Amino acid sequence: MREIVIIHENEEWLVPLREEFKQRGVRATEWFLDTGVVPFTEQPQDAVYYNRMSASSHTRGHRFAPEYTRAVLTWLESHNRKVVNDTRALALEVCKLSQYAVLQRAGLRVPKTHAVIGQQHLVSAAKAFNQWPLILKPNRGGKGLGVQRFNSLDELARYRDNNALEAPLDGTWLLQEYIQPKQPFITRAEFVGQEFVYTVQVNTEDGFELCPADNCSIEDQFCPTDQQSQKFSITHRFDDHAIIAKLQQFLRDSGIDVAGIEFIENDQGELFVYDVNTNTNYNQAAEQRADVSHTGMGALAEYLIGLAKTS
Image (cartoon, rainbow, N blue to C red; front, side):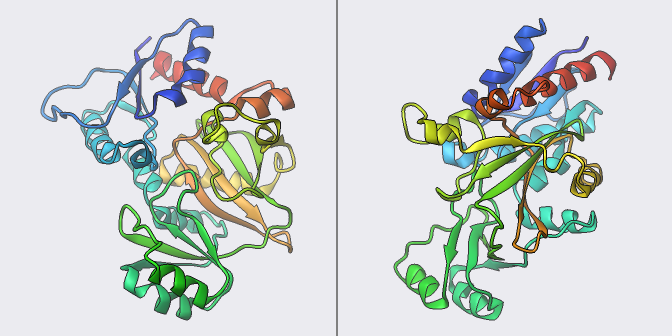
């Protein structure tokens, strides 16, 4: 069996995956990427490499971790090493506009979206967009950070004039139609090896920071409250829904092996896909409450071990 190498920039997110490997008698190597050297003309180790780099790495002080990862993955792929979530997946992780292009090609509906580069164009672009309320979000974000709702052009203009807007990492804002949800939650479909695992509903009443990982749900508190721990719940409503097959087609088209894909249902029952997370996490409390037979991290560990044995 070949070695499994996990590329990452966040120690906390690996804790439950380590435990799943331990239960199966396997130890994976962890490769923390923030800054460093890529020996591009040398041969990399023959292993299975799993890319867990996140678009939100800059929020943890790792500003150039995705760029470093891109160089590493390019090196690995140039030597035909097995990479789970390769450079194509990484490119989509850090660019929502690119996600929407591939999602649409797979026959999925995305919210009406305009891209804006340059803060001075935001108000005029919103005026032309002419759909209120609207969502302003960074093209490269993470965990829902920086996502804001504005109910009028005057509200957006005042916010901008007060210098309250923080420029997105790539300089690109997205103006997006606000989808009035049928109920106050979004749905996230989890896939491992391009196979459907389950869907989880995420309550949105507290805002847009919707990372499902256990440490994200704690946010700034020292321990989760009962209310906070109930934000995530497993649902079987979409198990046999047509959207699952379309999402799998999207994964095949884009070369993504592991992902959590978020969508929302409006009052008319229409589903809009708005975010793809190739660095996916799972909420263990929700899994335990639902008594799922196949956990997210368990499925992930088994998938990587299978690749290491057969690839």
